[in-house]
Image 1: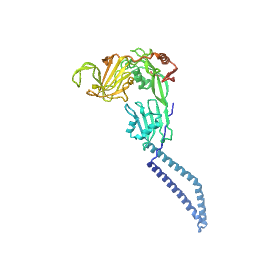
Image 2: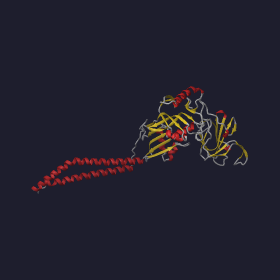
Image 3: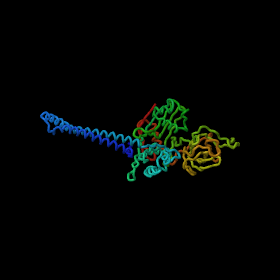
Image 4: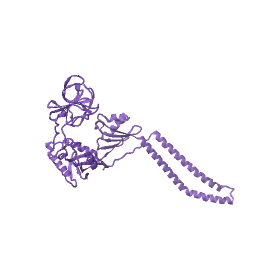
Length: 487
């Protein structure tokens, strides 16, 4: 587990300097006043000793004064000590007030980069000067490349009233966090602290009583894990209609820590057994080429090659048809596509892995994209308001990757996506298409897959302490241990 380092900075400016100076002057004047008061008291008590008109009575009084003066002098160290203590208390209060002022003076900006955003533009909108942004970019370029920040990156930035950035926290993904102490001059070294996340793997067992969500909340207090499990088996199980009381689940999952418990990570293996269902098993495997997926025990992908829809839509405004009245041209002609109605700007994703073969303007389709998929499938996406940043012909895309945004370009009466799919060169009805399975484990990596599978299943199905030492996450070896269970 790692400890996050916090950095504190002092920022001086004219107004705060004047305040501190005024307070110090008050302290000095107060000290002088006390000193004069003390000196005057002694003076007026000793002065009668030197009077020429003293008599015996006055001598006696003088002796008393001398005695009193001696007592006062003996008290001097105490008075001085109290004065020093009082002064220290006042200085401490001033220091606390100054720190509060400095904390108030530091301005913090938090942000999250969306598709098409740049950090430069985001900081300009927040009021940071172009010169300061370019200076920051130059100072932190060894850690953060401002030109290639992934979508979803989070950042936190602190700067003083003069506009000088003092701290930059960068979070490129849910795991990694970089805390960068920005130097005020080129002579200082850049200080970077990366918050480390520790990971262990635990086994969770549960039984369905009412729903997968409620059972997972009881077992692990995590709606996230319920969603993960539902997504893993999305093509095999409909958890809304097929889930029954008494069904059981058993999973191996990463538990991540940043200090205290941070979050649940990847599900490495899962098994679901239901009353209406046969036993379903999922094995997470990443091959040496970097392709990662969930597979059955036989090495077949649990996913289908295509998503059920390329976007989150409101409704289908027009179905696949051999003869449809065109809403603008007012003529009857084939509509070999599906129109998904959705608000302008809704993200559109490719339904499967493939290669972009066209991205540009195409007559009545407006902004249009075509993607070639394995097994002679081609998909088309029309009427887009804009393309995803950097999208171009020849680019490889992954299933679910955002390629554009809903619009009404070309011949369109309102914002929607015109989506089509062809097989072997012929347009087909996507809603009636039997979706093909995604690729199985590459035969070249069958040995590695079987090794990972056997280890995971042994620990998933057998009770007792976990015993794993396998190569995961880009060949980083991890030891897995621990167990939790629920009803």
